[in-house]
Length: 304
Image (cartoon, rainbow, N blue to C red; front, side):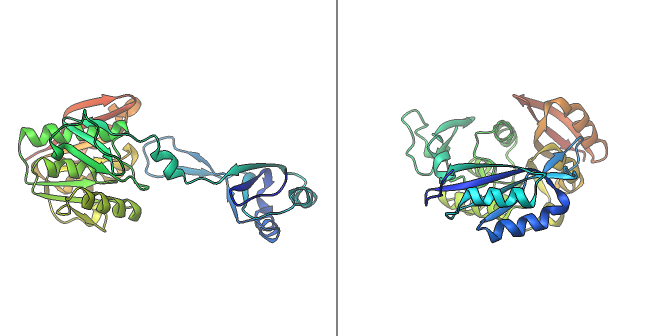
């Protein structure tokens, strides 16, 4: 392989590097012009715990990135001499604006109920509702919840049906992402809306989306559910089931007696175990479940 250019970067893959050589290998790579070094971590998650376990092995695979022109033949020769137990492979890849590439395939689409999701950089298509209050404009940024994932659609459907069933005064959206679920509740007339997310980038994206949709009355708070002191008529949490399990007592504490909770992000192959464990000690009872693909969502009620 030759030299890099301003539109490409090179990735050197080192397989089978001894873990005891990690520090030396990193220093040598940076001395030879590398821009970054990253281990390919191996994970295991066998149950519903929040965090997966990182599997550490005596040997490791590492990616080394070069954005400047270097003589790769000499780089590989030097690394082979210094670390003979490892195998090396170099590939060249084009630099891209990956968000811009993703945007090319993101089109307006019917989301849940009467609502359509409209990318902020596009106009509503003719088939979208004439009622602009049913248009949800989204600038995704790096946050989860643009409406394309089954878990978000399931949660949105339950939010719509629950708010229409019994108009509610307050809703808490935990793991708000782009803010799309809170925004739907706002459009349906819920007066007091709060979104929480542990990711600062998600909070920034949510605030931008709410401003884009002239819904800045929705408050995005900078703390976690464990610090929430208010109680709400509806609590929504569209988060992977392992995290929901960890947060179940905090979620229940934020719900008023007689209030409704909407959970989404539960894998179908473990939904029975999940819902049984979630309701066992939280004072919640399961009312109904819905599913799409490999995902399950549910509506629960807190005892009075």
